[in-house]
Image 1: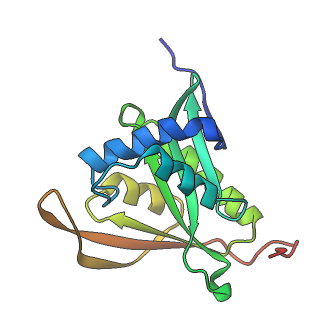
Image 2 (image 1 turned 90 degrees about the vertical axis):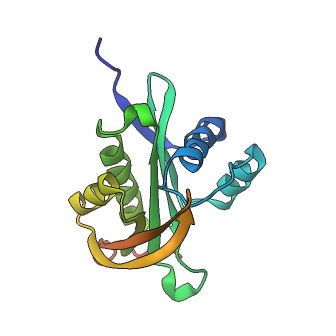
Length: 176
């Protein structure tokens, strides 16, 4: 049986329960996040309220089911950093390796280009080969690695930092 097409769209509040379930599963079973306690629905709603036009959140959906999400975060509140964002992507376990990450990252980078963002960075657990591969596919280059930067599941972990320069903002000058 063929699966329905994957849709990438802006996140809406109705998606937050499914997003939280994907994220909390990663907290409990994975190392893509170094959070160690599951998020409450209230925490997820506050997180979503903190995101807006300049820090977009996108949802991947298949057959009406939320199967992943991606978002951009400010790197700093300082005005000089306004053209830089950090990207983050999570995919539900049953949908990994099926191009969902590709679709989410491509869409997020397109939105960020439209916003006039110049540089996108990623901080990825160094053992997360799938995420490292995905980011390299989209032109991200390794900037370096922080050794023993995090601790989860009884072990020290490294994080690899990558960056993608999206180029000079396009013909329309950002309004922010």
